[in-house]
Image 1 (cartoon, rainbow, N blue to C red):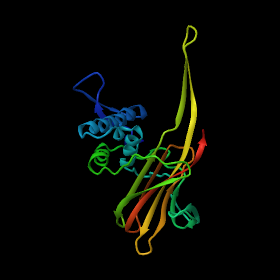
Image 2 (cartoon, rainbow, N blue to C red; image 1 turned 30 degrees about the vertical axis):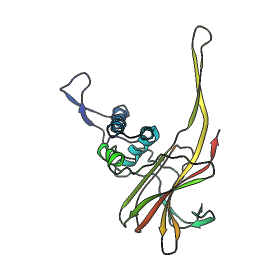
Image 3 (tube, rainbow, N blue to C red; image 1 turned 90 degrees about the vertical axis):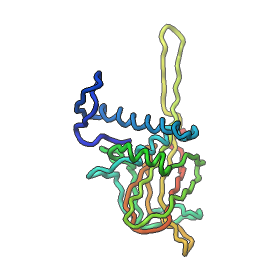
Image 4 (tube, one colour; image 1 turned 120 degrees about the horizontal axis):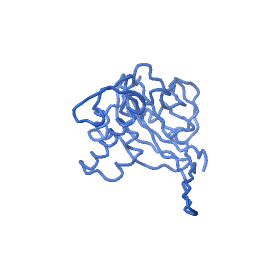
Length: 238
């Protein structure tokens, strides 16, 4: 969900309570990101949140969504014309000037540099998240409030791939097998509502096929009331 900025990071050393050292690489980044996840999980008990708040998909989404974008961060977002989408009222329509990514995350930096403080704010202080379900071929619409020109809108959707596992206890040795069971294709869309015309305009779309994360981050060019829509297009398999 994120990386540790730079090639060296200063932190406490293994096997001592008083020394510090520099480290780098994914093996160094992974436990720090895991530590942020643990802090969020712990906060849910501190503030007496319900079990839904401890869903792994939510914790993952918060960490991804709160990460700082580094210089050169690029998830392939491009403004695109003639984007075919189902409108909010259910009809087929074509939209221009839509920010589109089929990549979701940056191939090197993921969502950016992990930011524990911002993750805490989004999880506890602003609570700008929801855990929900959506039916196959259906969609859910969520209001995210009013935003202004120049604001940065960052939105993240995560879900599970279903895995099967089997353990064979016959014989002297145990055998274990696992594999893919089912995988859903979900899209994340951003819409702008116009109260005067009572209509919605498509602003952005994250549509990565073989992925369980959709992610958008961009600067708003219009002020107004914004909505997120989650669309369950199809089953990739299963």
